[in-house]
Length: 94
Image (cartoon, rainbow, N blue to C red; front, top):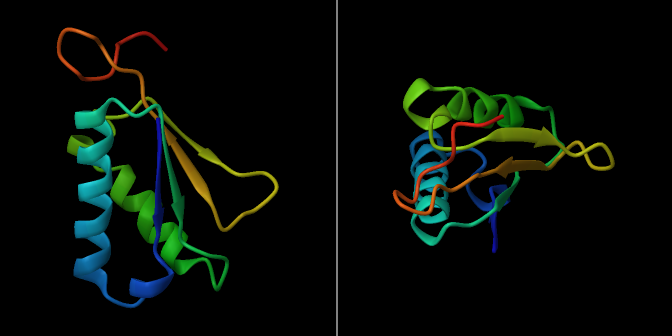
């Protein structure tokens, strides 16, 4: 399962961005999604940096496996998850 979050509509609304990011990460954990595609858009790069800072927070970082920057489209990120079947959380192996 893959989830997608496009931030174009709320690019200048800081609290809504954080809320939308948290909701999509929580949904991915709950539904055991393998990937979340986040589209901050190209623009100046400020929104992408904000997304990366959000994902780098300790309590968020423990929920996913890794972040991949799209080599073909720098306005897109992929957050990859590994889920442990018994807990619904990511596995420890890297």
